[in-house]
Image (cartoon, rainbow, N blue to C red; front, side, top):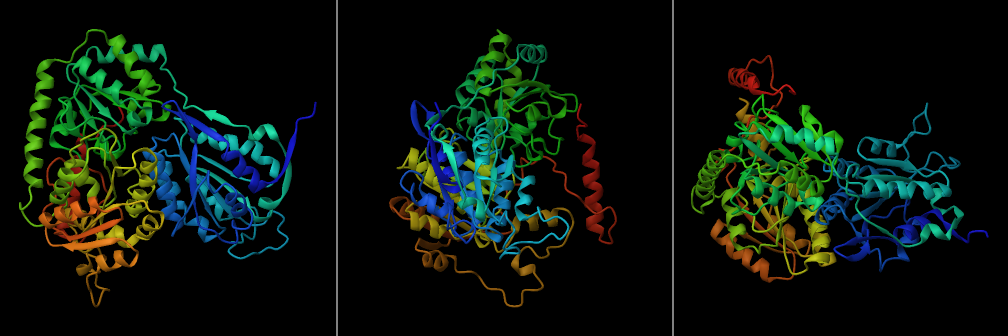
Length: 621
């Protein structure tokens, strides 16, 4: 008997397929695609827009203000859903699509699923060259969409309607794979979007996806235990993969059973609550003295669900050169970094397997006691730094005010600049999985857009909680239009704008490497002839948000309470000092390029100082 078919355009078939893909989360079935973000143009409005209109109730399409912001929002949405659900982003041909390149890079670096459905030039080439098409005279197959090959896990250009029968399932398989997870790009030529094909009806049948869990190899576990069972000073690094695996309980049980101290990466913040006895703090460049003090003494490091980025490893100076690393990761590439003993498998399955094989092993009590003592010292330091009135207005004081007032299940979002370091160092985790510090791509502009995407996802899960955004004036100026998006869609944000007069953290790096302040703070830009302060309050109000400007952290707290009581996006603005109030402790070395030749004495001195620190750097053994 011949399979039944349905006659559809390419665009209609894509959307119909997505509308019938589901996932089971905590026993409940829901669409794996939560909807999407879109800005229409001639490259996607006539065909893909027509198809999206018919599913507007089941795949809601949020209208973005900037394609890059849409991608950031989609990434934050996926992060909030622990990569179990994703959003699509659709953009027109040309600049609409290229605006998504940065957000695709962010999703790729952070291993986050987003689906990019982007317009492309006509496959027939009959009307070429068309509006917004870049011509490559010697290779007409190349277009701007080819640029996405570097920043996506899956890439395809649909040149015939039948291709989606293979391409769409492959794209979803990539996005739903814990190992391969990342953005998927599908280029849609304008003519092909409207071409028709007789698709098998079976292609559109409801399918329920489940995240695959890979068990570790028995031999891998044995190799790891041979190392760990002899450890005198073991340590666990808990990364973001712990949360994506849903392995917080397993991590906690493993640490408690074997009395092993735990440190967190930036992506792994909120794996443990603040007052857990084995939580020794964040590690690395933006870490804590407590975590870094045990990291440099640990003889065995169990790295769980982390890609060991340089801010975690202190450019590989944070650990003893002879320390052994056990890499527990669902991705082989991450599990084997720096000659680690790899345990390739899902953390939720791997940690119990390791624990069982480790038997009665318990870390020496003197080692754990040392780690806890270091933690007490660090908490005392952060308490001092964050105390309101201890110096001029600062990020740290503001973080303390918000931290004290927020609900345990509120979500905090930050990215790039100085705030990731300050939030990572000072945020006191009240509940699991409540912190999103985007530092995989360190992308300015993520904050407000990411907050919007996180709030959409949060509303689907915990509608009564708040999403709190920390952003500096630099990031706000770079991308602020999703203040408007949040107002339009009714997804309330509390946005804390801390104005330090420019790009203060890069000015700090500039000064710390011996350079004079130049082109970072507004007052140090020689091309600025008439500097003035932006009225962020008036700007936010013009986009429909509540907004107020405060003079100090005490007033900030009162404004925050008003924002909590409101059902509308609120922006709170406060000036902070560009030079004082920074966290000065807890930082490991970080490798940055410095001039080997210079006429500036201070720059030369800092260069030699930097080179001297390289002696601690591990060489991969």
